[in-house]
Length: 89
Image (cartoon, rainbow, N blue to C red; front, side):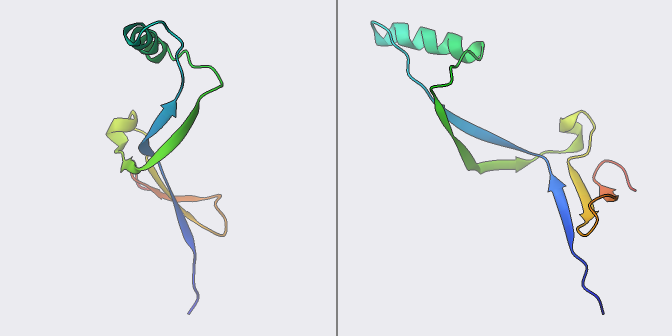
């Protein structure tokens, strides 16, 4: 009997925690600046982040614009998709 290896690629959601500094005269002013930065994704390259692995969750194809979020491959080839959770192959 032979042994076959497989891999499944899964798309998930996950949270990141990003750290940054704001220079301001008061905490209220700093909060306003931070909110603006968050709204417009205006972070510079001086911040760092952590991946919050415990927040990882599977998402459904419906939550992914009706695109697959899991794809199964025979590990030796990885060329042929043999199944996905959006449509049977």
